Length: 165
Image 1 (cartoon, helix red, strand yellow):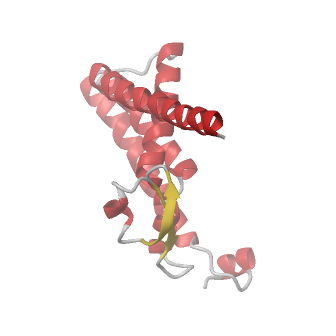
Image 2 (tube, one colour):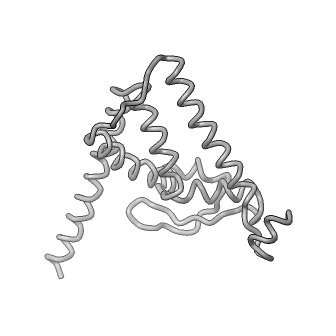
Image 3 (cartoon, one colour):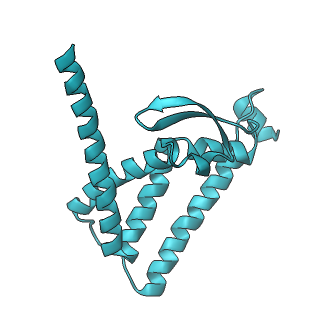
């Protein structure tokens, strides 16, 4: 463990190298989106439209949870995590399979955390609004509609349970 890592975490191993790798990859993503915008002559809007902000916000919520927790996307997380148990409503609880100080551990924490993934997803969707706005809005609409449907499904189930009990 490096001196800085030891001073930060003491005897607990934290995946600081993994976090640095994730930050570098995120910086690469942002730089690539910026370069693509310059290369295509597309410019970011002075002020994003409120409707786009709401659409991307709800879509970010859904896609982040889908990637980090959904049973269907577990093959994407499987190299980094181990299945623990169902978490209800199509989601899973998983645990990190890698050592505490490894890059793999840092990636595992990222891919299982919808809060952590949200900044990546929001950046991708926002970049998509600049580079391919029609397609991005269409995809974000699907994710937003799915989010609303999820909440309606949960409300319907709760109403049924309330009526029965």
